[in-house]
Length: 130
Image (cartoon, rainbow, N blue to C red; front, side):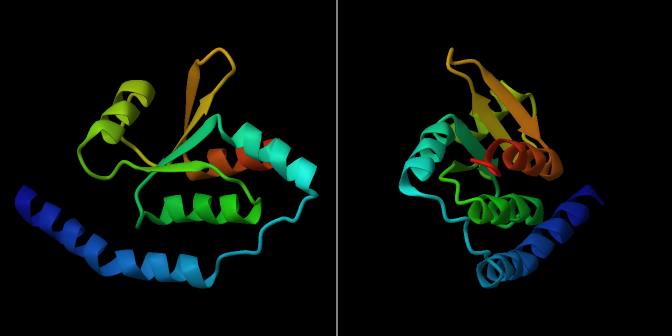
Protein backbone atom coordinates (compact mmCIF):
# COMPACT_ATOMS: atom_id res chain seq x y z
CA UNK A 1 0.00 0.00 0.00
CA UNK A 2 2.82 2.38 0.91
CA UNK A 3 4.47 1.78 -2.46
CA UNK A 4 1.19 2.50 -4.26
CA UNK A 5 0.74 5.80 -2.41
CA UNK A 6 4.30 6.90 -3.25
CA UNK A 7 3.79 5.93 -6.88
CA UNK A 8 0.51 7.86 -6.99
CA UNK A 9 2.01 11.09 -5.63
CA UNK A 10 5.14 10.78 -7.74
CA UNK A 11 2.97 10.40 -10.84
CA UNK A 12 0.83 13.34 -9.74
CA UNK A 13 3.95 15.52 -9.42
CA UNK A 14 5.18 14.47 -12.86
CA UNK A 15 1.83 15.30 -14.45
CA UNK A 16 1.04 18.53 -12.58
CA UNK A 17 4.60 19.89 -12.30
CA UNK A 18 4.77 21.26 -15.84
CA UNK A 19 1.32 22.80 -15.39
CA UNK A 20 2.51 24.67 -12.29
CA UNK A 21 5.60 25.95 -14.13
CA UNK A 22 3.58 27.01 -17.17
CA UNK A 23 1.05 28.87 -15.02
CA UNK A 24 3.86 30.63 -13.18
CA UNK A 25 5.47 31.69 -16.45
CA UNK A 26 2.24 32.93 -18.02
CA UNK A 27 1.06 34.83 -14.94
CA UNK A 28 4.39 36.31 -13.79
CA UNK A 29 3.64 39.81 -12.50
CA UNK A 30 5.50 42.93 -13.55
CA UNK A 31 8.02 43.89 -10.95
CA UNK A 32 8.00 47.05 -8.89
CA UNK A 33 10.10 49.77 -10.53
CA UNK A 34 12.37 51.63 -8.12
CA UNK A 35 14.98 54.31 -8.69
CA UNK A 36 18.42 52.74 -9.11
CA UNK A 37 19.69 53.72 -5.66
CA UNK A 38 16.65 52.17 -3.97
CA UNK A 39 16.95 48.98 -6.06
CA UNK A 40 20.65 48.72 -5.19
CA UNK A 41 19.75 48.98 -1.50
CA UNK A 42 17.11 46.25 -1.89
CA UNK A 43 19.60 44.04 -3.77
CA UNK A 44 22.11 44.40 -0.93
CA UNK A 45 19.44 43.41 1.61
CA UNK A 46 18.47 40.38 -0.50
CA UNK A 47 21.99 38.97 -0.24
CA UNK A 48 21.09 37.85 3.29
CA UNK A 49 18.09 35.84 2.01
CA UNK A 50 17.80 32.44 0.34
CA UNK A 51 14.66 30.58 -0.70
CA UNK A 52 14.74 26.80 -0.40
CA UNK A 53 12.21 25.45 -2.87
CA UNK A 54 11.07 22.74 -5.26
CA UNK A 55 10.58 23.92 -8.83
CA UNK A 56 7.13 22.38 -9.23
CA UNK A 57 5.74 23.06 -5.74
CA UNK A 58 2.65 25.31 -6.04
CA UNK A 59 3.40 26.99 -2.70
CA UNK A 60 6.95 27.73 -3.83
CA UNK A 61 5.52 29.13 -7.06
CA UNK A 62 3.32 31.45 -5.04
CA UNK A 63 6.38 32.79 -3.18
CA UNK A 64 8.38 33.16 -6.43
CA UNK A 65 5.51 35.18 -7.92
CA UNK A 66 5.67 37.58 -4.97
CA UNK A 67 9.46 37.79 -5.28
CA UNK A 68 8.98 38.78 -8.93
CA UNK A 69 6.26 41.30 -8.05
CA UNK A 70 8.54 42.95 -5.48
CA UNK A 71 11.57 42.87 -7.86
CA UNK A 72 13.71 40.99 -5.36
CA UNK A 73 16.96 39.27 -6.25
CA UNK A 74 16.77 36.38 -3.77
CA UNK A 75 18.93 33.31 -4.22
CA UNK A 76 16.83 30.22 -4.99
CA UNK A 77 18.04 26.83 -3.85
CA UNK A 78 16.47 23.63 -5.16
CA UNK A 79 16.18 21.27 -2.19
CA UNK A 80 14.02 18.61 -3.82
CA UNK A 81 16.68 15.96 -4.36
CA UNK A 82 19.07 14.48 -1.84
CA UNK A 83 22.26 16.46 -1.62
CA UNK A 84 24.07 19.18 0.30
CA UNK A 85 21.32 21.80 -0.18
CA UNK A 86 18.64 19.51 1.22
CA UNK A 87 20.92 18.54 4.12
CA UNK A 88 21.58 22.22 4.86
CA UNK A 89 17.82 22.85 4.98
CA UNK A 90 17.32 19.90 7.33
CA UNK A 91 20.24 20.85 9.57
CA UNK A 92 19.45 24.56 9.74
CA UNK A 93 15.67 24.58 9.72
CA UNK A 94 15.00 21.21 11.28
CA UNK A 95 12.82 19.88 8.46
CA UNK A 96 12.87 19.48 4.68
CA UNK A 97 9.57 21.29 4.18
CA UNK A 98 9.42 23.95 1.45
CA UNK A 99 9.16 26.79 0.79
CA UNK A 100 11.59 27.97 3.41
CA UNK A 101 13.25 31.36 3.56
CA UNK A 102 16.65 31.53 5.25
CA UNK A 103 17.23 34.96 6.75
CA UNK A 104 20.81 35.62 7.81
CA UNK A 105 21.55 38.58 10.07
CA UNK A 106 24.74 40.67 10.14
CA UNK A 107 26.32 38.41 12.77
CA UNK A 108 25.83 35.36 10.53
CA UNK A 109 23.00 33.81 12.54
CA UNK A 110 20.22 32.32 10.41
CA UNK A 111 16.49 32.25 11.01
CA UNK A 112 14.43 29.75 8.98
CA UNK A 113 10.93 30.84 7.98
CA UNK A 114 8.52 28.17 6.72
CA UNK A 115 5.05 28.54 5.14
CA UNK A 116 4.37 30.50 1.97
CA UNK A 117 1.93 32.89 3.67
CA UNK A 118 4.42 33.83 6.38
CA UNK A 119 7.22 34.24 3.85
CA UNK A 120 5.09 36.52 1.68
CA UNK A 121 4.02 38.57 4.72
CA UNK A 122 7.67 38.93 5.74
CA UNK A 123 8.77 40.02 2.25
CA UNK A 124 5.91 42.51 1.92
CA UNK A 125 6.60 43.94 5.36
CA UNK A 126 10.28 44.36 4.61
CA UNK A 127 10.27 45.45 0.96
CA UNK A 128 6.93 47.02 -0.04
CA UNK A 129 8.02 50.54 0.91
CA UNK A 130 11.69 49.99 0.03
